[in-house]
Image (cartoon, rainbow, N blue to C red):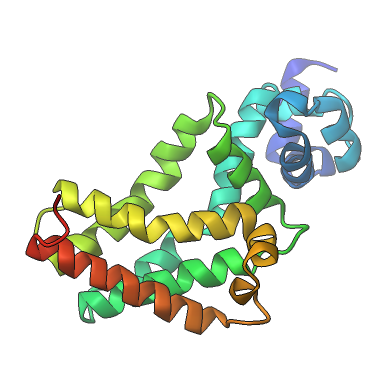
Length: 225
């Protein structure tokens, strides 16, 4: 088949066009989450998608661009920018906005079941970054970080690039990171942290209380060494 004929098929609604591309994305997520970037193969992804073995190269230009796209999609599914923006909207007190942000993060992280490939893939990438982390940082992490930093900076009365803002953000994000990568194991080691013992709302409220207390200390200078 001529190259021009193949190109025209991509723009139409045929199964080997947009639908196949979407199927490859859906199939690739669990494969990358299970095997990692180095262990995944285009052949297995295409097989799970019910596509031709050459489909990954045809639609994405290879397994590396596909991984980068899937990684970004995983983070979008975990933490949607629009949802964060709504939680950080300027119509309320910044402390309430921070509580809403923490509540959103706790709900998102704890809603991920054992079969959730976005959570597994992001956790794998954070623990063992690939060369594709840069795109994830630039396109997904930076815009969302800016929202969180903005709220913290407003609470502290400093600019977003003040070192204390990043330090406060670390204290806020660390518990959510731990829940993301090891909630099941964490709950086994510390049962009171399990979903059956503490609700999302109560856990988020307690994390927010600690975060706001720490921010107040940093802002007053009491937390400085």
